[in-house]
Length: 107
Image (cartoon, rainbow, N blue to C red; front, side):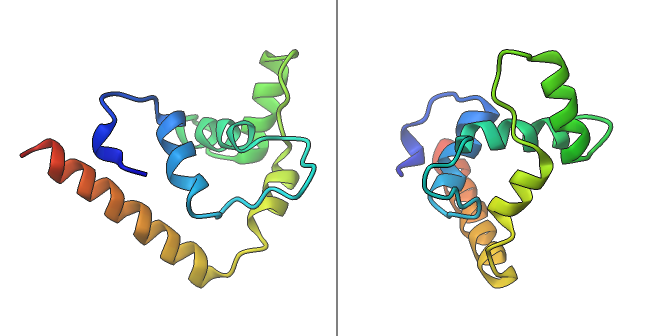
């Protein structure tokens, strides 16, 4: 993806784009939840005081009765199939994309 063409984006949109290219979150065939559903929980956990996917999932389920919200166990299943080496390599790649985007925007 060419991130230099992005003018503005939500954190969820940017995270979806960056993580969809790395396959850190591996959705099985026929998964009940989308990558965006999963990232919504993770971003809520990262930005809430509980700092926990389990609390974030429960909080989102309680406040969004009409939405599909995966449990923390489901999210863990999507992530744990990766090796530590793959996850670290993926985040290095994501960081490099962000640095490249930042560098292009400051020129």
